[in-house]
Image (tube, rainbow, N blue to C red; front, side, top):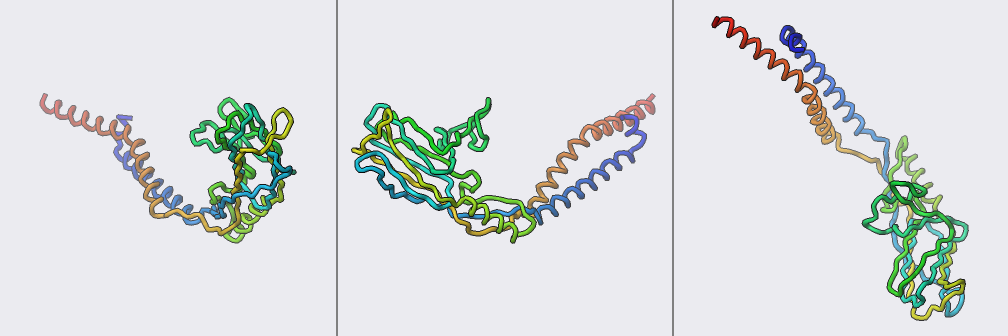
Length: 264
């Protein structure tokens, strides 16, 4: 390589010229793709509603309520359980939902409710229409469940579509498909017997969604082009660093040899 670069400096010019052309072509490709991403963001309401529980049996820890909205979360808070070991049973009629003790825990690592099971690297939710949770303390305990995994939990989701009209139809359909009439039954048992609701405090809320709007996902083409150009130039510089070092080393050695030859 030293001899080739020393004898043919045009090779270096060709490499630099070709690299600059590639940089310009790739920068234009990034710029054009930011103008039409084919991705659309859709917004939904993300409203928490406190549920007014109805009693199935008077003076017993046995309640129910009915939801008809598109729901992402059901949250239950219970306090004042006097039994040493009681079981809270939450049942959704005709619908499977997701539960894990790690749901809603901020520092839960290696956890993903969409994995569909337990693996060596992560744990996921269990999916069923009935979930049983052991309550072993009279202190406040919180239970979080996911009803839908398709709805955006923060009220903002993204879809890929050919145009804004089709994107809106698809987003509306996602929300409509999750609107189901569900009767929830919640009861507290100990050894198969329903406990009394004396001194019990239970609160239930759900997070519901309705379609709001859709808009095309856009990036700043100038900003993205600058970032991509800087990245490409940096990569190009790293690729040229070795041959440039070899070239200038060979050039310096050649001049030094000529100088020594003239002195002798």
